[in-house]
Length: 193
Image 1 (cartoon, one colour):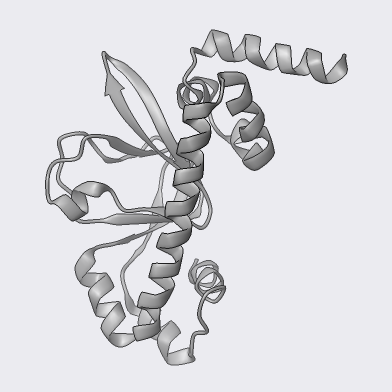
Image 2: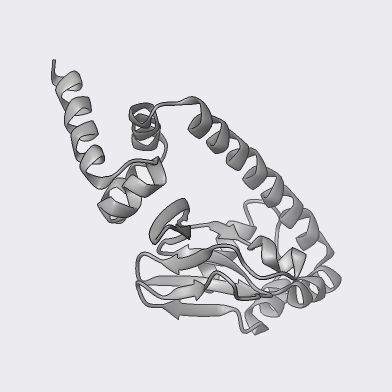
């Protein structure tokens, strides 16, 4: 588990043996079963999550229906906005697979920044990448049809098509599960035709 995290960090900054030991001493690693709700609407939280292995998703419940907004897989993380605002969460976070994640809070991160100053630089770089990626995803979602969204998903995140239940995928694309089946059939027919 630790080596997965070290490999990710070292894409951004080199780590010394001492720095690896500092990170290892933190109690951040969790093994979580599929279907575990990590955060519920209305709860307050002080923790962010980083996926080492597995998949977590964020979703809202509107009119009794789940509306998936994002999937986070290996080497992706989320800090719910309620950590920053100190208000209740407006959405849910749950695992869609058995997962290995890290769990951290602002105090822990502040401690890491003090002990390993270059860690703050890495977090800034990762945050900038995440923000740019989310903006691109948001723009694509707002300007494309469900069929175009599916094609983009096929190209950019094909693993999700195998890893995520169809009803969650349909929700993420903004369609009903039956519509997703028809949409897939249309795309398949076009690719063969």
